[in-house]
Length: 234
Image (cartoon, rainbow, N blue to C red; front, side, top):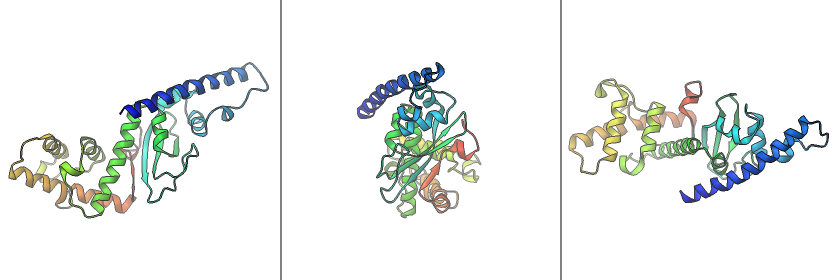
């Protein structure tokens, strides 16, 4: 956590410098200074694109308009970020909630550059869901304490992985809350609880495993944020 905080602090300093330069350039253009440098000459490729696709005209304000909308895991380190960094395997698409614009591919370090905790959480959640999907595809039995986290369980619920059925009284949230309770439980579970966990995670077409396999077949090693799947930004 300290390392992330330090990275974000460094990016804030960089951002202030970049923003100041941008404001100077904009002011120069407004004052009719013919030799004012274009914005693309002042900002990095990513920051320039972010500002161009936002309502706000400086990165300091524009960064608040963006969310992480999609994640892809590459088999080889062949990805190239908008910032021009190469050798990436974790690629994200970001989405502007005000303009509807999207920007990709974005690397993990550039997600941190926005300094938005929500974006960091969204990126981590999408990444962990794809990792869980790969575990299911590899036919490894899903283990609640070994393969899941609170973040993953919340992501599964948001994505609709828990299906309404007779066993949960046609209320999918009950399965999510039950698994969350079992995940947090320190004492040894009862036999009935073990059987219910097994049913939710691994048994039948309504299980989490079945949902993960269906997604893997349809989308491969990628996943969209729930607010994009539902056709809008939250």
